[in-house]
Image 1 (cartoon, rainbow, N blue to C red):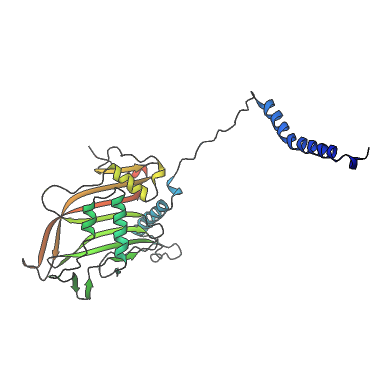
Image 2 (tube, rainbow, N blue to C red; image 1 turned 90 degrees about the vertical axis):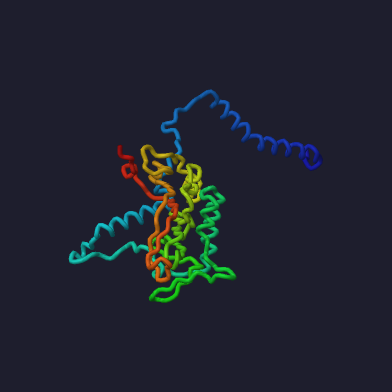
Length: 301
């Protein structure tokens, strides 16, 4: 029989071959599945999700490195190749005085943005942000805040900053109390991630009612802004002397906050009461720091 004389039969045969080839894998897999049904294979080591650790997080590695270097420098580390004297410092701390730090007007936006983000995230009350960013720009009746020292004039309407050798940036605002210079605000951030690791704000004390301190929810929000919420075990530590604190054993990290009264004592050549200047103030202190379980502060009976 000449196939060319029967094209319909040829077409039908080709379709049948194609369908058979297409169905072959499905038939094979169905047979394999049928043979596997009802049969169990023991698993030698069931999968368990890894527990996050502090070393998994860049910011905690940086904080631990800074703590280690500070402890080594404080203990008088020596170079074994130079037994006659101290070795070179691997960690250089940031300067913290007005005259040693660098003024930067453009950093005002950085400070304000960071504080507003903390307030929006529930870490800070808005009042603390207002106190921290009271730049003393002056009004129609008052001049902008300026500090005069033997080394020159310093504009206090801008933040001053310094960076340590690990990349932590400390930003400060200085202010005047009857001509006496004091630190009104200090914030330490990681320059790579922008995470805030330390915050200190001074506020005027008007009465005995303290401004609000960050509670447990606020401290969890502070952990979140540092990218540490996934540690998953933040909890209030037992017998801890800090009034507001959270601790992560997985990350070996402590977040603590406190609002406390303090008295500022300074000196001014323009003080109406003479050279001495004194005022009662509130201070907010909020920190994230590495802390091994054995280093966790405990309340003594």
